Image (tube, one colour):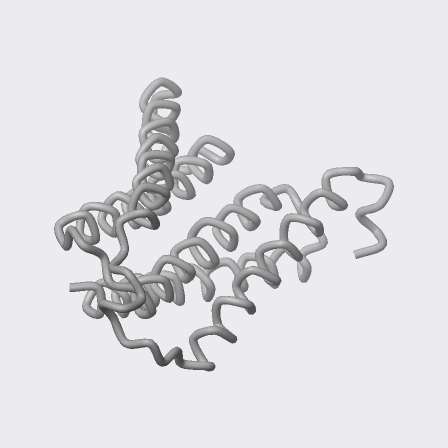
Amino acid sequence: MEQKWSIRLIRFAATFGIIGTYLGSHMSGQMDYSLRPIHAHILLVGWLSVFAWGIFYKVYRVKYKKLVSIHSILGMAGALGLTIGMWMYTLNPFNLGDTFVLVFFIVGGTLLLLAFALFVAITFLTEKTSERKKQCNPLLEAALLFCSVHYQFYLFQYALASDSRTFNLL
């Protein structure tokens, strides 16, 4: 079960990575950084968090397999709902009602929050090391390290960019 959801989550994350990278490139080319919060959330939530979950499921076995499916669906729906809701809240390209857009945004964020809370629980429900293979793939360890460093870099970059005086340094 974990292997199936691992590749699904990684593919989903890769799609967000492409979208986030394109959006960042577009903003840079236009010299218009008004979509910076959306860009940051696409990359932090859609790319890095979902990618980390996919790698986690590749490395660990969870005792209760149904939780893997529930978490993965919640995480993907939440990442999609939050980022699309944020985009609609910022631009409202379809002239939808403000209430609908706000509820869409909030529901997406709530689903994502539930996915993170469930993930915390899942980390305590993994099989013991003696029950699973003791060998660890160095490539997976490198991927987890990359994800952690990349996440911290984006948080730092976004914090700097939030201060308009330091934004020109980026």
